[in-house]
Image (cartoon, rainbow, N blue to C red; front, side, top):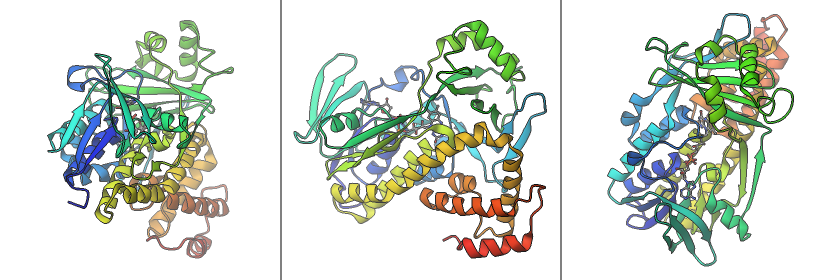
Length: 450
Ligand SMILES: Cc1cc2nc3c(=O)[nH]c(=O)nc-3n(C[C@H](O)[C@H](O)[C@H](O)COP(=O)(O)OP(=O)(O)OC[C@H]3O[C@@H](n4cnc5c(N)ncnc54)[C@H](O)[C@@H]3O)c2cc1C
């Protein structure tokens, strides 16, 4: 309990962050009205065109544990122990993500996870979930939150203060506040889009190694696949919108078939519905959202993708949104009103979410290009050796982000840069390195981790 117990708050968007946040706030005795554009998931099919499955990592599981829902989530998870890299013409090679058995990430179906969170939230006293309620505008000066029932068309209005907007990357709350000049927003679109495809089960089993995130890096574009509990994989093609190798160049089934036969010959035979799926599945856009400020006094706060959507290449958007929920919940322990909580949230999270936005872009280059590079593989293996020798000082950046929620993203970014310089100095080009020099560089440049 805390000073805000018994008070009411609106949350707009019962997606991953909104549902988890509703649960956390209600556990503190806050009354939550959760407004969601989609119909009740118990009476409808999941939305098309969203990523079907996601990689959940330690920052996300920590928040789910904090909310007491990990037992309900665990049956939905498939461990992914590393990347299975598929190069043309050679056997696939497996690169473990970490060095310890527990250093795995988890594949989880978005719709199922969202459903568990919504069910848990609405079992909590004080939570009301209103489906088919689309926010159509927010006005801070007039203190109005405007909604429309998507089934009946009936419009309604509520007091805006206090509202937490978790309505995702295309947030209507954010854009309408930006429209009145109350905040500034910018979307940096990538020139690459994505399309999701299916690798069906084969003889009732997964057609590829189950406990891995599969990558077909092709330099400039890539295909990835994450396992589902029904023995299928969801594959995602990331490809330029325009140009010689692009979605624009794949305008007819013959071009699609030829492209997959040429670039992804080992997996194309496992995709019998490729041509129909390619023609019918949406082509999604990818981008980074910047907004400033995230809050207007104690009246409204943007959180999750609504505040800081990122490109998906580090598998951290949901994890960061869940970490946002943990941080907000922590701040409730120390602050007596929404203004202080929202101010504290922005002060604490901005630097970290900017850091993960940058690392997510860098990871795209790593996944589609660098994993094929001998230098990258060599430096990665030196990095793992340094982690074994100096675990209290050297942890590879990927591991800091994915497995160490106690290390803030901004610290992971800063230490990652120092570590990259150490690896560049130690890499002799033959896989060997000078252990004495390594010890001196680590001691000199990397203070012990907190
Ligand atoms: C291709 C792809 C792959 C990804 N892979 C990963 C991954 O592996 N790991 C990871 O951590 N992240 C991943 N992400 C990112 C992740 O999907 C997001 O960061 C996460 O969904 C953010 O959660 P959120 O609750 O902020 O937003 P969302 O999950 O988008 O939820 C927003 C909610 O608001 C509702 N809504 C929208 N507009 C309105 C409105 N006007 N009124 C009322 N309700 C509204 C929506 O229906 C939805 O329920 C991926 C993203 C993409 C595009």
